[in-house]
Structure formats: structure tokens, C-alpha cells
Length: 402
Image (cartoon, rainbow, N blue to C red; front, side, top):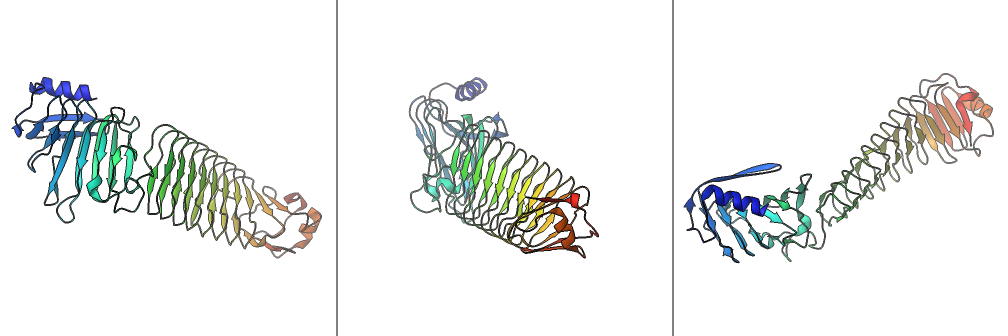
């Protein structure tokens, strides 16, 4: 992209490799996938050598041309100038500093970024760590937005892959660790958050994402991903693929989305544990959880606690397990499983002749024993009760003993 931008700009403006007098009034427009920039009026151009350019507050852009350049955006009164830094050929460093005015935001862009050429983004004066930033890419990594604290940047180029090695951050301040890398590529990534509230987005590939402590937002996106929350109230999501999600500690929200997923709420009272579309294994685990199989033939487990379990569409197998649980099959012929320690459970939509009730052999020896134990809509056994809402009678063919 450096040659494209440089040659197009030179051709349009009639520039030569020699230095251009600062603050020459002209305008050029550059469009990259996902955004466009209109750079007006005043700019400073470097040479084909190694330049260090610090503009004035009235400068709209800096163009480094060739060489390993250091291009700086300056701030005054809470405003940043120039709005755009263009590197050109060479291993360039794009420097953005914290705003000078109260409440100011560093909002600008770097064009012609190439990780392969050795370009770097210098944010050492922002008092932030790499893990404090949210980085979102377009599909082919020619554009990324970088957001965090007072930073709101657009980065464009031929190879926009940002990591802790090419984003220079402060050794002091911030809440994360500069060794932690929450940028992603279209390949298989290992992404780790910090002890603060992180947003980590995978892209393509089979990603391994760990949020750590804090209230994190984690999304595996495409591919067969492993996404693990930590302590805190996390949102743990995936896109297409056969994914493994675990909220771990805290009150979490999880959704496997498309694919045959394994989703576990972990410890804590989880408000929303969804399998999504596909044949999923969904487990509330420890705590009072709300668990949904959604579309597909799902295996749904409550684990410990007073859980609300909903199969959704498909032929589902629903395990109440420990605690006093509420089970709803949804559409399809569903199988409700009651083990040796099931507690006092309620099935809200059992349909005799369509759905199945399965009991442990330690509770009943035969299906006839279950029918005999049914009275007033309730089956009573040594582990507790099973209430069948709105059901007047059951038959032996509704029962399975294992």
C-alpha cells in the first residue's frame, strides 16, 4: 500500500522526493477498506531518508515518504494535530500522545501501516497498556480501529496486525500488562485479557481466548474456538464453528451461536447460558442458572443449584441434576432425566405419548412403579418430587428406567 499511496500522491500533486516546504496548502483523499479520509489544506512532507517530523498544531497531515521515519501527532488544548500520519516506505513509527486538554480524545489515523515492514504504533505517552485497548479489524486486515481510554484511532495499510511487539505502551499506569496480546488475526490465535474489564475479539481461525479477572466481553467469532471467562460477570460468545465456552466464576452470559458447541456457565448464578443453533452440550454447572438449548438436538444440564432449563427446538435431553429445577422441553420429543439426587423438580410442558421421563434404577425398579407413584400431577420418589404441570395421567410407555 505504501507504493500505491506514495505514487498516487506524487502523481496527483506533482511531488518530488525532495523535502516540501511545511504547510503547503493542498488536499488529497485516500480510501481504504472500511473507511475513507479527506486530508485538507496543510501538510508536512519528509524525504526519502530517515526523518523525525514534529508538526505544529495547524498541520493536517504528515507524509514521511521513504526511510525509517518517526511521525508525531501533537496535542494542544485537548485537540490533536495532524489528523493523519502517512508513513511511506520504510520501518516507520507513528507517535500519538495523550491530549493536553481536560476530557480531550486522541482521534486520528495512521495510513500505510505494515507490520511486515517493521512499522510501530507508539502510545507510550498515553499511560495505557496494550491490553487496555480494544482492536477490531476488517476481514483482510487492511484496517483496524484502536479504542481505549482517550485513544480512538484508525489504522490502515497492507498488513495491519497489531500486537504487544509493535504497539509501544507505557511501563507505568494502565491496568493491564504489555505482554498480554488481545489482537487477533485470521489464523489460530492465543489471546489473553488482563485483570481489568477486557474486550477480546477473535476473527477467523481456531482461537484460544482467556479473559482473566474483571467483567470481560469475549467473542471467538469464526472457527472452532475455546473461550474462557474468569472471575467477574463475563459475556462469552462465539460465532460459527464447534466451540467450547466457559464463563468460570461470576454471573455470566454465554451463547454458542452456530455450530455444535460445549457451553458451561461455571460457578455463579448465570443469567443466560445459550447453546445457540446446532446440537449443543449446555451446562449451567454450579449456581442458580438459566440454561437454553435453543435450536438443535441438545443435551442440557442444570448441575448444582435451582436451575431453569429450556430445550427450545429439537429433540432434547434435559438433566435437572442437583437442586430444585424447572425443566421445559420446548418443541420436539424431549427426554427429561432424573438421577438419584434430583431434588424437587417441575416439568412445565410434558406431553404424554410424545416426551419421555427417565429415572435412575435406584429410584424405581420398573415403569409401572413410576405410574403408581404419580398422584395429583406429582411423582414422588426417594430423591424428591417431579411435578408435571397440567398433566392428569401418564402411562408406562412415557417412562424409561436406567
